[in-house]
Image (cartoon, rainbow, N blue to C red; front, side):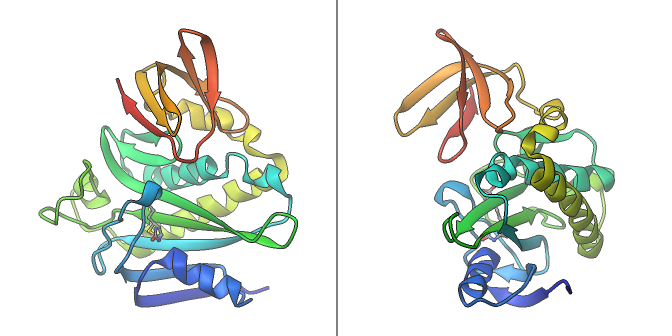
Length: 243
Ligand code: BTN
């Protein structure tokens, strides 16, 4: 079957657009936009999406293997984005659990996954990826430290090249994830975790956990050594910061 691409000049959010199409039973694989007027980040944040500067993409991924295909999926996507960024020549990029891509302390890309439909039925995951490509200062302050490929590489970067690299890595990693599960990617992911061994605070709806990052398990959960021993935490609405 062909690979369906929609390229928009402007859109509220490529994730929202992809969701609307899937709900209307239209087949497509990726939505790209030059600009988003309501770009969304994780945990209800905004994602700055200036015109023609960056990559805003949402991939539509059918869930055929049930829950197992979803475990660790957002981490797997982060790894694919990181590999695409590595290939462009960025040094010292890494991951922050669950799916931030950073250079040092500065964010260069982010991933937002949304599930549509329930697993009993035909469901899909919308895989939203935002990569800061040519965005330059000064822009409106984003509220968290950020960088872009252009800042890192010292010159204009072709979004076409970024997209092509991303698509290649994403296809490969998503097929490993589907056939073998996240367990097959865990070691590669952990090796690039910038916060491994660091002292952190993890906040969730129920409270604050303090401890040291150990590693992640086969389900993509984060291990933290607390006063009670090693405990694992699943993604969702957790927020992790250095203590
Ligand atoms: C995050 O790190 O908070 C996730 C950011 C995800 C941004 C991308 S840009 C394409 C897609 N459309 C959106 O509205 N968000 C994602």
